Length: 277
Image 1 (tube, rainbow, N blue to C red):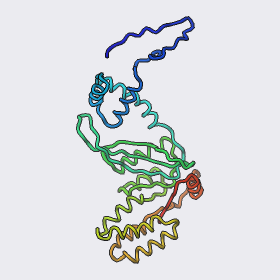
Image 2 (cartoon, rainbow, N blue to C red):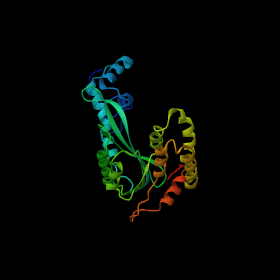
Image 3 (tube, rainbow, N blue to C red):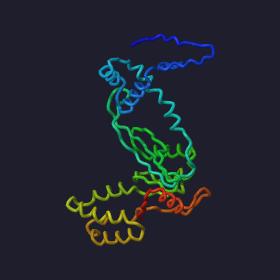
Image 4 (tube, one colour):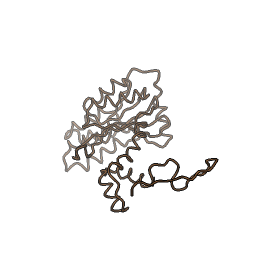
């Protein structure tokens, strides 16, 4: 409601501690500040938050004050983005998600959020980083991988991607020993577009037996059955499933450990890993 002058009582030993307004506290009502940050994180503008506070709390806070409150999280964000990572990750997923956001002019625009999700050697999932760009491209992914390398990631065993053009080359430039596997979800999505709509349901039912197989031998047998049934109608789809999978490079590094031991550790942690070649 305006400026407030607070006179804090003092004693000889400086042992007095106020209960409502703490010593050297400049922002009152931390709960309100947390609510403002939460509203801002949901995509509300500073003026929309100001209107909300006036409507619900009966007190209008200026947009500049709200902006200064939301800026309090910037040091934490900067520290999180620059934190050091583990030297080796068994599996890393990399994909971009597109969002509608409001730019500096107040216009709705599309931005690509590059997400890097990894599994560490203990089998725990960890969000390694999030990066913002105007659109998705292999060149920006190269800068993302370089940033991961600068933050301490020396080796990635398996990288799961969506098959973006130039993505494989970008990974090999930074991590030449990394095995790249196409995301099963993207592979299914790319396959079904070649299948007639009347056969979608039946084809997906047969295809599920392939990518949900318990081991490589079962997957190969199911893929042979799929080829016998659908090979003449959809040869492109069958050929794409025959060529995907993990291709282990011939080269090795001193930092590289056994892939099987890593997978066993991850399975012990309750994470199911299926690979189809």
